[in-house]
Image (cartoon, rainbow, N blue to C red):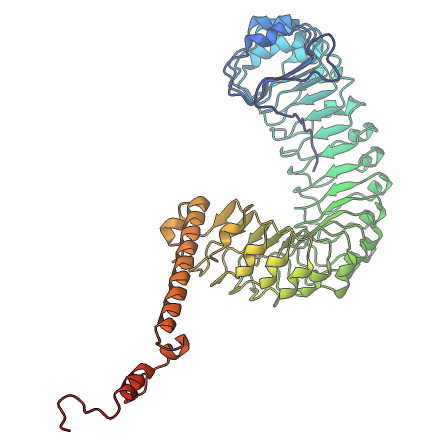
Length: 560
């Protein structure tokens, strides 16, 4: 599920982006990220007009006092460095609006400097080993719109957090909250709350006061029930309740008309809540590992659904109503008890990803061959019945990019794999393959070929013609050509061996052709005759010719 993401384009050296913001040779953007820097380059402080500086993912240990020269800076990213303290000069950057100090071992006492940045709108402190938020930050910063605190050791929020009346997004994932921080319920501008992976046992009824809440993440907690008042969060479009202790969800949530994404995986629902069928705007529905034995017929109403996860349930057949979901792009049916697919499956004309791993198919389900848009097919059988073949008609899936058929009993692969122009990943691990078809060398888009734990002894001699192949795994095969020690050296050594072996074969063929021609020219007869086994007492044509020439002459040692 989508969360707070900061996307930055990185450059291999200090990069100045001038184009639309470049006026009179002034620089407004500098990117010095991913450079293994141990200190901030002093030349950066000469660009006094700069407004955005990226220094993330280096090894910087301190911020020098010269930072105060950057009086116009609005954005500063220093995440993923080795900062332990912050210099007082950082607090003088009165124009700074976005600051990221995540993934640094900063002393919490040093964070007091941040409280002087009164213009700050976004503050990210992910995984900084925080045990509490400095109260002065909540008291002095009145313009914060985003506060990122994921991956710390917080058990509660200071009561002064209520001063953050402009706060729109707060990220508290992977902390140690056991009680929902009720202070959030008076921050009426909140649009996103992320409390995934905590230990929260209840959500207060006051959550209903947040009428502007759009995304609410409380997955992997200890919630047995939800408050009925959640229905008052009328703008809610994303609700992640996965991996809690829920048996049902309140009927009042039917009123949430803008719901587009809901996660219920890992709860003991045992049946699909009926109200879900009322959310016809749903795009993503997660129902994996919820104890389902069947699917409600009304699910066919979810005509806008793009993603449906029904994995790890007890379905003994693929529900026919799924075939009515014409806009479906991703369907997860892994780890059920399905033995057959409906013939109507082909009506899912937009389906791109299909997961069928770990079911009870007795043979390859050929119904999938009607899915012309399919790009990824997962049909590895890590438990139960094993597939013994893949049909040649697999070539019908011309859009297929990734095929996962691991953990089966395949002895051979279809020749038609060579005529699949978009195939990039072929996972055949843990099968009984004895050889690969030579046609596999024609699958020029192939990037990964996973073959470990099979019965292969030889590789096709032209396999090195797969120029895009980057990953080839051959462990646990009784390899002879190339031998195991060559295979262990990696692709380049394997390619070299195949090329040299191919050249030897070509040379041998030329020598054999020369020898054949020579034998014929010298009168030993046609090559085919030379290969025929001679019968006892019979002589060769040359022997007969020699006897004819001396006809009538006495042999040596004989009397006339």
